[in-house]
Image (cartoon, rainbow, N blue to C red; front, side, top):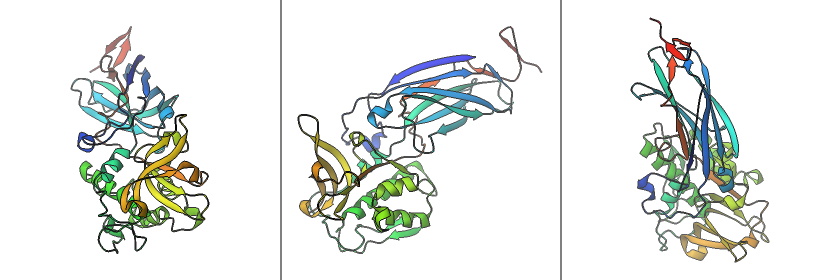
Length: 353
């Protein structure tokens, strides 16, 4: 059996496409340590017969509140051409560590004589695309706050269906409308850049998106109070952040305040403001509000938050062509390929014709 191991450390937590990041601020977080191995790759497999490949990992993504997706490529050892690509992401919740393993089921046609495998782990977070979207908005009062209408500045369409219309004058908007608009526009631009057609969000139907929007807007009663967190977890396109120290720029926050019943605010997280002891004193976010004359960054005291009801959530992206270059770690068996068919005698491979 072939046993191969490689350890790799990232210096950036989000290495998004250069077109998104050329002017994007980066948060200062520690780089996660990720180690990946292929402990039991067979020396020979039978053609057209399923076999298992196990990928083991050790990683501290959990320390930073990050999650990863595991990929396995099978390639032709003679040409390096890709034969198959699979991924596992724990039912869209990702893997965090500290250690574990996943198993892939593979099969290869008899057209190949030798194959090798490449395994790697990549980020699943959608935050870079959210951040890129909010940076497009001016913060000069030209997108004023107005608690009226639907809260968006343009019609939102999804899969050919109008989900919600812009029924306010000019660029007036309110909080749940503008955060939903950012979410939808970020996905529209992502799908366009990746050539996704039909341009869905994780397979959500147009009918489901109408309900998704109502949950985001807290329009379905008390059960929808988590807002974006409930919408994204219900439809498996994101997850809730339970350790608030792991909140990151581009996360969605549904604020509920102490003292005033049903006083809430839908915002996009920027950072925590802390005192000299490292304790949270305020939350800084992006949204639209009267105090900033519309879209801008704003802050609120941490002590004013209703902690048991306020939620923080994060969107996740599907597998795409950036996963390889953004990988946390990778491992290859190219130097010790697996033979397809034939027989092994005294450590040598014999091929029968």
